[in-house]
Length: 446
Ligand SMILES: NC(=O)c1ccc[n+]([C@@H]2O[C@H](COP(=O)([O-])OP(=O)(O)OC[C@H]3O[C@@H](n4cnc5c(N)ncnc54)[C@H](O)[C@@H]3O)[C@@H](O)[C@H]2O)c1
Image (cartoon, rainbow, N blue to C red; front, side, top):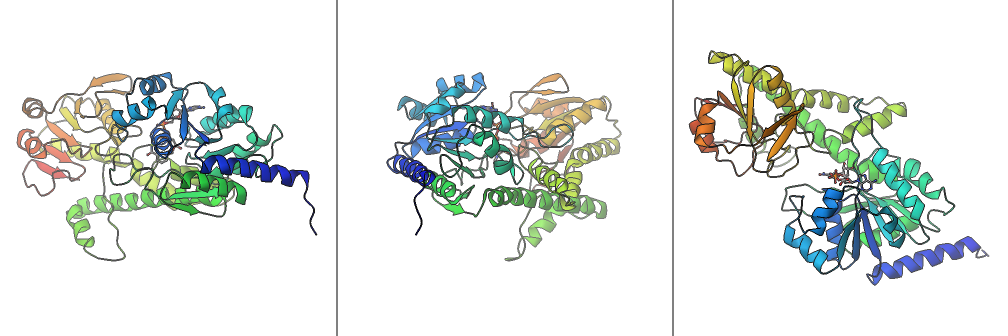
């Protein structure tokens, strides 16, 4: 017969206490890092009836929330104002508020260092801030995309350093965010949520919390599996985009229209999924996350091949775009030096305001280094800093388009009038097939 130990009593108490607080929606939820991932997550939990505190070290972001101004395309000002006015959601820069929370999700950045190694400093500082305030029956969920092992190798030791035991006193899980900025068809509530806990109790608590606010929970057996799920998803995209980018280069060489090829292949009702070529990868996920996986597997003695190759092909695309632009100008008797190039779109994908890691930045940088005079239009980005040069966006008016030597479409924003662009610019290089269906002598596609 098994006897009940003191620690079993602790486990049962912590579990029951948190469970009852979540079920009654009395649990106070917090998000550390109010960015593209954290702010929608905070509002989703607040919509589900929880009292939510958002914590961010960026005073500008916290001030914007307090003023009811959203800085995330997918979050409307009214939505934010409603949540703050009804006192369901508040934002603060005070990390000590963690002590008042029952559950905390970590949504801080996971960028790369210049050496392309993971920069874990944000996760470490968030974990340290939680460790200072950690209390019994608290649930911690890491959301940031990261290499397999992070939750148990990095976050867990920081949290247990003060004597509390995971699975007994507090709960720790990993649940990757899958938000697709700018995609109105899917939001945080509707996208299935993968969850892996350090212990079964941890997984149960995280599933209970997120299951109260999100439609579908997908439990997996461990935090490592959950971490790897996200990396498989993003590596899948990176590798397939690299493949289609290489096919695009090949088609240009063979004088075949790659866009027509993709359209033809997409008619196959099974076994094919279209990916599209472009000027290069961008954003905080696809160009970065696979390199986290490559780094981790290399440390553990496994040399991956696809990831590095995909990175090489994708990160070569901005230079390829410039080379093609140079050739087009050359065919019209112009040198790049002194030419006026107008860039259409500088965000990494259409209809969003995020220009982080955008290939437009690299394209503009190379064009400037070659002596071109660069202007740009983007309804979402009023100004841009490239290599210390500040450039203000201008409206792509008839005069602006007519005055350039070459217009390069980098982002296929819906707001652009592609008919007007092709009608007025002397030469258009379309890297996204944004002007699909149009035929004109001055329109050249990737
Ligand atoms: N952007 C996306 O589309 C997306 C999608 C899925 C997953 N992710 C992953 O989610 C994570 C967050 O990405 P994001 O795009 O929301 O980043 P972001 O830069 O928009 O937001 C992160 C926020 O964290 C804050 N922050 C940093 N350190 C902090 C600390 N110690 N305490 C409190 N706040 C802190 C920053 O000020 C910033 O506001 C990353 O790991 C990313 O890879 C992003």
